[in-house]
Image 1 (tube, helix red, strand yellow):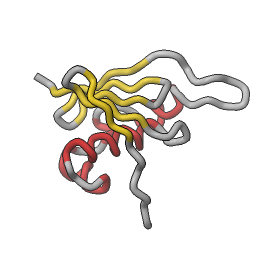
Image 2 (cartoon, helix red, strand yellow):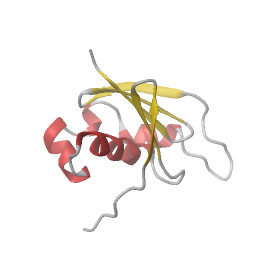
Image 3 (cartoon, one colour):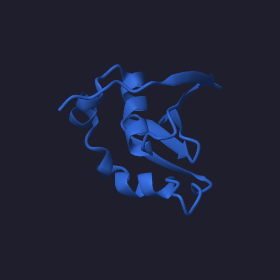
Image 4 (tube, helix red, strand yellow):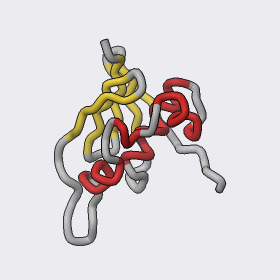
Length: 102
């Protein structure tokens, strides 16, 4: 199976790391790509290093929560959870904010 690297646009946000990905990218994949970009690990190594994402949040539920369909718009809001060494906040725009856990 081949994977293409995610396109990431990073912008500093008051000392935190904020990443914005393509709107069509599922947020679960966005989270993995952001953690990979921040830690320097390959996206395929993240689960080996920090455990699977589903130990922190249900990836299917995360994707469904902020997915727009022809009948509905994306949900409004955000969700925050701990994964790897970060407190991660994702929102309906596809923005992923990584903050160091204390």
